[in-house]
Length: 323
Image 1 (cartoon, rainbow, N blue to C red):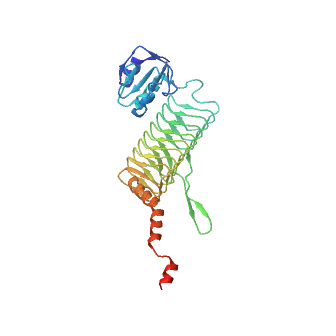
Image 2: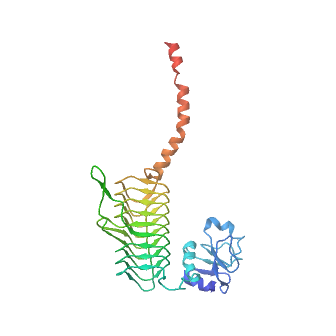
Image 3: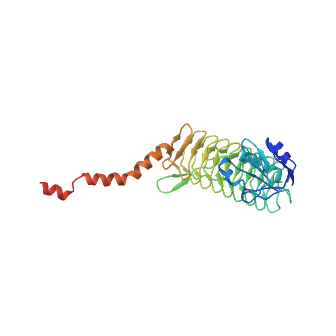
């Protein structure tokens, strides 16, 4: 698929400086781009622009008068939008692969594609223009909206991890609720989203879950929240809208994370805690980044402080001599 620089600029809302008629046919990064590729650069990478062979570069400003560029407000965002001009959806083969298993009562919307080896349980409802990659498992009764992408190996609607001790053994608590995946959600490979126990587990509109994420029963993930790989969210927790959750974060049960919060990689949030007011938090237990850095700085000074203290404090043998 070839597009001129002028066509791309019109699509992303940018201004051409250079050759508007130049034809491009792919996307690449600055280092690997060739004369027929579109690349982008944030300001911190401007030093790499002169050496790039890219035919056209998306930039926030243009200090390179000898290059063909498209000036845009947000180059990375413009690159993401431009990608849709070059990447065609895979429409080869049947919409529902012959090896997929579709149980009675399941409803699959217009334009939705179900890959090889998928299992769609009884009563599942899937909206329009959704993509299920190979080996996705959707348990009975789950609901998936429109334009949802579910990558290979994901499991939606398995029983939540709920048990009650009766004095001798664990008794399984009923896992009778559902899973609701709203529109425009993306779910990474081998991610698991458990059904609710008595209510529903809900992934709100526009949320993005990376690979290997575990979402426990009755969890609610807010609109446009982003959760990175190997994060686990335990039962009945709420992740607020537009929150950013880093890799390997552990969120215990009945936690509330307010909208717009950022939890850095490997942060830990104890049971029942309420992360209030957004902001950046890190560490275990998670706390505001300024507080954490102050504590870490104090900890780093501790050996020197102890060494100085020992110099000022008489030893036990000296005390004995004095007595």
